[in-house]
Amino acid sequence: MTLILRGRLVTPRGILDDGAVVVDDATIVWVGPADGLPPAWTLPEPSDATILPGLVDLHCHGGGGASFPDAVDAADAQRAVDEHRRHGTTSLVASLVTAPTDALLERTALLAGLADAGEIVGIHLEGPFLSADRCGAQNPADMLPGDPELVRRLAEAAGGHLVTMTVAPEVPGAGGVIEALVDAGAVPSIGHTDASAEQVDDAVDRGFDLLAARSNGRLTATHLFNGMRPLHHRDPGPIAACLAAAARGELVVELVADGTHLADGTVRSVFDLVGAGSIALVTDAMAAAGMPDGSYRLGPMEVVVADGVARVADETGAIAGGVAHLLDVVRHVVAAGIPLEDAVLAAATTPADVLGRRDLGALAAGRRADLVLVDDELRPLRVLRGGAWL
Image (cartoon, rainbow, N blue to C red; front, side, top):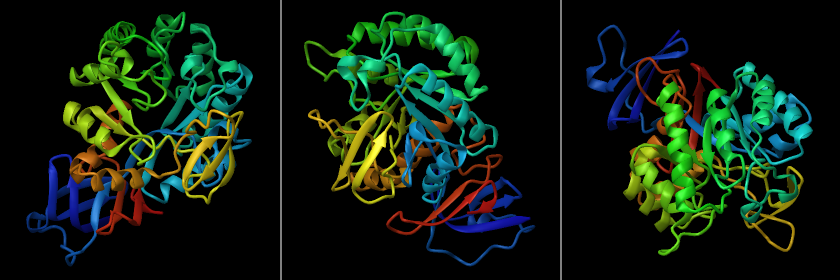
C-alpha cells in the first residue's frame, strides 16, 4: 500500500514547512516539498502536524513499569519497549546494568530473543567493567576488572545483537575488553569512569583505530558528565577528552538532556562545541518512565521516584536513570534553545549512524518508514513504524 503524508517535515537537510512523505509498504520512497510531489501521486490537503523520523534511543533500561535488567520473560521486556514506542521511539537499544555474571548472561540471552524478533535494535551492557568510584546507581560489588573472555561469552549470548558496552578505561584489562568488543561487532563506550584525560585518549585512539579497520565507526561516551570525574582546569579528566574526541569525529557523546541530569546551559555548550552530528540524545530511562512517582528497581538497586526524579534509595541519593521518553528529551532540548532540526538529528540520525543503521533515523528515501507525527508542542499524535500505524 502507498501512504502519503503532508505536513512540516524535519529532515537531515533542514525543515520543510510544507512537505510530503511517500511510503510504499515499509519504506520511504519520496520526501520533498509538497508542490514538488510527482504527478503519479495525489497530494493530500495541508496539515498542521509536524512529521519527524522515528527516534532512536541508544541507552534505555526500561519504562511502563518494566525494567530490562529485571525482566523475567520476553513479555515483561516488551512492555518497556511498547511504552517508548508509543511515544515515538521506533528503534530502541535495551540496556542492562552491572550484575553477577550469571544474571548478565541470562538477561542478555532473554533480550537477544527480542532482537531476533525485531522488537529492539540491539543490547547495551552498562558494565561490569566500570569504576567503583563512579558507580552511580550501580552496585560496585559486582564490578570486575576487564575480562575479554567474558565479553566473548556475553556477545555469544547476545546472538550477534550486542551493539555497545560501557567501559571505564582505567580498569585493568580495559584495552583487551575494547578489542574484544570491536571483534564482536560492538561499539566501546567510555563511561562510569574516574580516568585521566590521557587514559581516555589512549582508549579512544585504540578503539577508533580498531573500529576504522572494520566499519569506520566511532566510539561513544555513556551519558557524558554523569558518572564521570568532573572537569577541572588542572585535571581535565574524561569529560574534556571525550569532547575533544567528539570534535575530531572519533566519538559520539550521549546526553541525558532531560532537565535533571544536565543543566540546559551545559547542553547548549556541547551542541555548540561538537555539533548535533556528534551527539546522541538518550533517555537512560528506567522502569518509572511513563509511570507515577513511587518505588521501583534498577537491577539490584532500590529506586525511589519523587517529583519525577529517580534516585537510589540509600544515603548516596544518586540519580538512578531517567523517567522521560526520548521525545520528551527532544522537547526539552528545543525549549532550551536548540534548533528542532539539530535536536532531531541528535535523537534519530546520529544514533542510527552509531549503530551502522543507514535504514533508520531520517526522513529520506530508502529508509524504513518510521515516522512520528507531533503537534506544535512536540507532543505525539501518531506513530508509524515499518509502514504500520501503532
